[in-house]
Image (cartoon, rainbow, N blue to C red):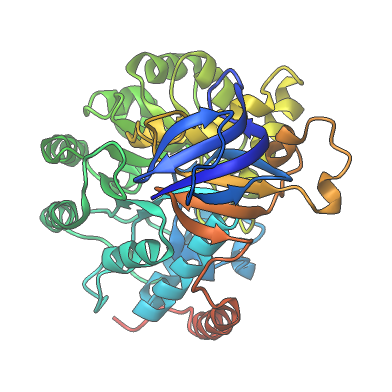
Length: 457
Ligand SMILES: [Zn+2]
């Protein structure tokens, strides 16, 4: 049973040098078999790419699906990261019942799939015995239902940050033992170490410098590596991180974490906005990766991360949208456009080109997640593809239509495939009732908005 994607006039392989692709792609058993000037075989299924840009499926390396029902919370709109954390995730987490998380995940995954994502890494960091359900299981189920590849970055914390406000709910803390047990349980149920895994688990303490002791971080890294899991966390999202680690530990965040065994090619951090030259060199030398979240960093006024500098130094750079509570435009098209424009606004037109941004969102993401069988269109790679539709007025008049997904910021997806199976077909997600999802979203959001205050202890 094979499938031929035909009539490709505008395509990308995902390589950093911007290699283009045309002709056709033959797919069998979930893999790309051959590319180039190919004609359909008798009985072969055909997918027509006329009027589309073809690219490897996009890889979102840092997200918080639980925040898709926490968009535009008024108290979190015009405040910086610390206050936003208090007013959005840490105020609302106790109200996140199973239905709210399931609806939120479905909204986020649908938005990502309809913007070209075929692999999603979700950093979930609210676990508590207050919940009568397992958040990890809900997230894995919802991703599988949509047919997306999914990396569960199992977060958590042993210490909460102190946020002002007598009415703040308690932080969702676990003991180190409970955190490690949760990690082992997730790994045993969902971690597939293969190069084209449909489901993976990563070890993702929420924010190392605020939420754990150095001794705990050493132990966590050792256990994760023993389990064969990669390491992920938030780091240096704004200047507050360096101020805190200098005060508490006498070092900036990156050299401090190096001392806990937290750098290397099996580690990637979200944000990395505030880095000095020595930190950039340490990240590049160690092969530590970046989940670049340009829109969330802009929305919260945190700054512009030095992604082009890290890329030039050889560090793996990937693209991510971050949670929709701090980036209401939580789609991959917006992330491509933000990365393309923000770096040029700051560094000039030579700062980054469209091919590099697309590489970050494809091969870069696969490298960061340790999934080398994805992210590139070439024989032997996973048949994860996205076909962006160019029929809207926005895309008419383009001299080089292949650039559309990056330089126009909003190329809709006509079709996408994961392991050769359709996730988006003719602009729709088969089996997803968007009207019903809209009603569910309105009901859950109204419930959360009515009950934002802390429950009595
Ligand atoms: Zn985040």
